[in-house]
Image (cartoon, rainbow, N blue to C red):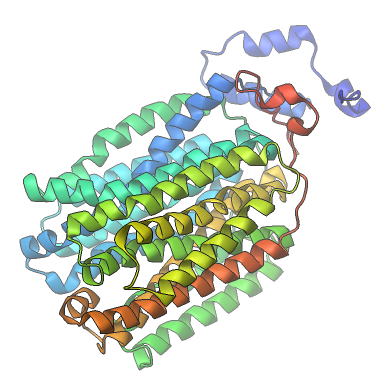
Length: 539
């Protein structure tokens, strides 16, 4: 169906050919690209990007996002060596916790800042902070310095994932967006599998500091690629203010909750004064943050976004599945080593089918969304099959042969992959373009919180099943326990993971299946790889 004439008020505002030529005549001048985009948007015009231009942008942001995702996993295998080097084995958890706290807390902040100032400057700022933090980590001379450097690194890494997904939303319509979201998912999966392997190799054969030095060339490459590519991303300047008080209240509430989840059952008992105080502080500041959302003229998270039922259901569905995936990624290798008696290297290899199926299904689902009207059927079918596979692990945790176990885990991974592109695209499709950044940041924030919650719950289940107490290492207890006790403990791990998946499926069911915006429904040529991308229009 061809498009009708544009509204009279837009047609009247359209600049003349001479004016447009004047705007584009001096692209080399500083700020010319930004001025061009702003003026064309103000005139009601559209900015078109070709598929090669989109591909260039996507490659640049994939490298940036790979930096943030890799550093969450590459440090895991180097932790024992780092602890011995600094003589501070008791403080090792802070190397991970410091990055987790800061990266999670600032994720929605990056989305809001990018909505106000544009994607390119905020993305470049995030990469620069990450690179500086990586340099500080590599040069650290004590555990205290390393922990603070990891916190600085997290301040940059927290924006890379959310901004990458937001930029995808800027350059292609929701109808076409799924196939690119699949590429984004593949970066996360690659970092999850490759990070521990690369970290172990660099630590064992060279030096542990190289897990941070390697970020410098990668970060500089990401800066160069994104600085050039993101000039083509359209941006409409908007007069907005940042709710600093709201941001501070949310960060304090999130940090207190993450500390409670990280320390509960490990440093302090779950039922203790310390854990209870952290939970209470978190609850109070979440209450103050909610109050701020109501009274602020321009709140940190717009109420229209939080009240949107599609955003709410899509974000929670993605959070449940991401939390389960992260929990499985952490505890399945331990299950391989202790229940199925694989070596550490064999356990890493055995995890590949689950992660690979997540990537492949994410890409396939994203591409299928372009052609489907009832796109929810894919994640619903995937989660149904995934829940059955998870149930089989819970029933026979030590009775299935290894090849069958790998097939079952691949099915479970594929079920997660069927949800991620649908949840992200539907969430972005349901909000105005001016709120895409903050909505995407909030969704990633909830994914990180859910991941921390699921990991804490699964860790508590394993610890309790093995008869351990506060301050005991799960890994050491698991290696000392009998096969029967281990199988019983992991049975409940898989049951808990299945319950979280079931909640994710319930949120997918509750999510309204709105038609995806974009020309693909109107013009078959719009989805062809060689054709132009979706026109970007200011809302």
